[in-house]
Image 1: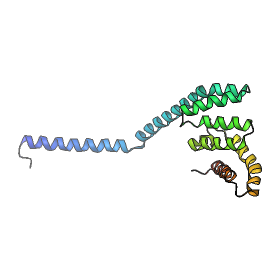
Image 2: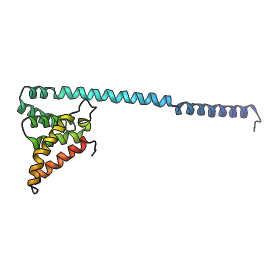
Image 3: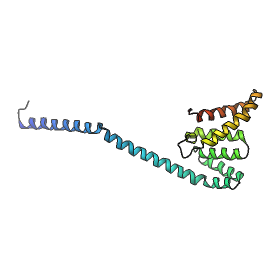
Image 4: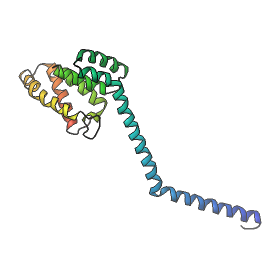
Length: 179
């Protein structure tokens, strides 16, 4: 087995390689490597989330200003444009629901809120900076009081039944349910 110098050198290099491999595996399996990588990913996620919040502020800032100035129709037109341009962004639907609620269109407002919450559940999360939980709770209570009574009196009305389902969906999401 160890007949000459070449054999001895090969066996020595093999032993060194195996021990180095074992040492590397032992160091990587300790918690330090994973914690640092996990921390990096958490920071990366937080930065991406903050960038998203800032982008939302820039995109929908003019709409918020028009709404605050009482120009709700212009704000809705701008929102329609933004919703078509960014179909996967939930904030436009949430703003649309808010404006429609201010205008007294409860059923349309509920539909907009449902569309927004389906796209992004952060709007019902208490800890999220995007949270509109209070507004959504108020709309659910208002809808249960007004639409629920009318729907109970008219069980054959499919439009009211659809609105009740949407209210129940929002109610479920507020209670912590998921889709």
